[in-house]
Image 1 (tube, one colour):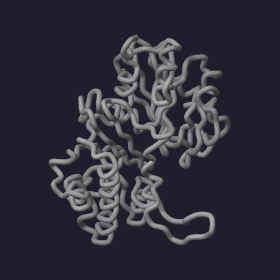
Image 2 (image 1 turned 60 degrees about the vertical axis):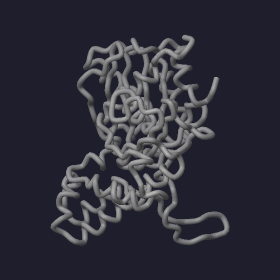
Image 3 (image 1 turned 180 degrees about the horizontal axis):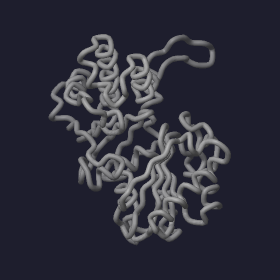
Length: 316
């Protein structure tokens, strides 16, 4: 069984299907989102809490309690749980190799430990893969054979689907936010510098919001009246365009989607982003190479992606 489909095929062999009743949990750098699926249909509402609410004490038990509380409030049968993590998942789809924004999870066997508490199958997946899979199934990238996604929130992540299947490299792949873009100095062992995430993610925008005393949700709208803020945000957009140029130069996708909480902020200059991308990619005839679109489903794409992954495989 290929590593690419190990987590989902394993879940199917454990009895999960599109007709299962599931709780889907997205652990982000700032918030935890919970949603439900019943008989192949996402349910309302989607609930949110802060990561701070679960990181004290035993984070696994706290997470399990949140799942139980959600399913009880929504009268859901719990056949299984899908959990996304903002970090590196091992090829066993169990161990969290690195998780900078929720360090309490780092090194944990999250899937098997949560399974022991909840007594149901657990599927671990990268958040960006589920986001893009959902957009491919029911959103802006519907039926696209070759599509990439860049998702900018507290961190920056990316994914790539070819004929609906995710590219995983030799395990994890496309941790775009960790690309070093600004080396500061070298020693004998490593290069020390800033990553794409350090200089252009939602965490960086939060610093700007504090610096200029502007609510983060209004940051882009307020920039037009503040030349210093406008200059700093222009640089951020150029780095977002750089992330797209990396994806386009590497994979040459037919379409690339931009999504995540930063892109959804009011006033985000999407047309300016597209112009910046056209200046950075190898061929400036952008329309003949890659279509640039916004993701359309928001976090519901995680639910749609889960449903799509649980479709019967050929030969089932």
